[in-house]
Amino acid sequence: MEISATTPPDQRGYTMPDIFVTTEWLVDHLSDKDVRVIDTDVPKLYAEGHIPGAVNPVDHYYKTSLEDRTHIQGPAQFARTMSSLGINDNTTVVGYDRSGGVYSFRLMWALHYYGHTNVKFLDGGLPKWIAEGRSTTTEPAPRAVPESASASSFTPRANSEIFASREQVLNAIGSDSTVLLDVRADDEWTGDNKRGGPRGGRIPGAVHLEWVNFHTGGDVPILRPADEIRKLLADVGVTPDKNIITY
Image 1 (cartoon, rainbow, N blue to C red):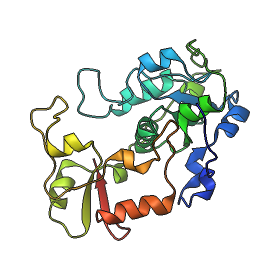
Image 2 (cartoon, one colour):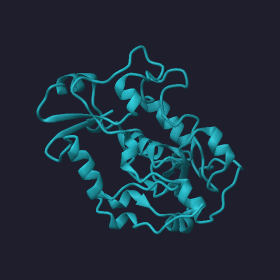
Image 3 (tube, rainbow, N blue to C red):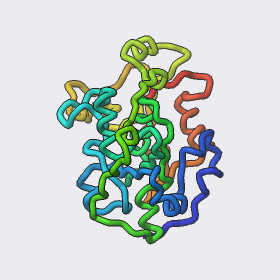
């Protein structure tokens, strides 16, 4: 696999470039005791090869169980999940995946929701890492062994500001100040694919822009520059003057 030169994330015009780390940065910090690398894909893909030292959650959706796929884990369960991955209140979390960031940004949102904002995204993910000839392993990484009980603790602090409740979504339907942004696949938007649910379709009044449009595609998908993303969003009515609810 070959990779063409890409513009570094801090030169793409992002409002928050500090949430990105490069493969070069990760090489330099892979052994740092306060850095935890999370392979956010499913365990099957993790077992086929991952970045050395990376750990893998049982469920990259961070939902209550593999059977109950409705809600994010509650505070106590989420704290146990993070602690089991070696993440505590002082950990710098670096997530990566194989799909342009879809699962890494999900981890980032979940951590931000529970008040842990020291989380980064590996630009280019595993595809870029491999394209650059960097090593991978099939050996599971050992879980971190804390020096003390306090060092292992993850303290969940739910941030309701980044979560839209059912009532907020209902109130947003037909609102001139709020846009409901549906980022699912085209066949989910049309209702052809119900994803195991009882009904297909979309929330009335929502606009649609599938998440894959936000990255470049190809063998090494990279998040598009900010100006391209802003234009994609503006074309469907998502502008800075609006409140945005994504789903």
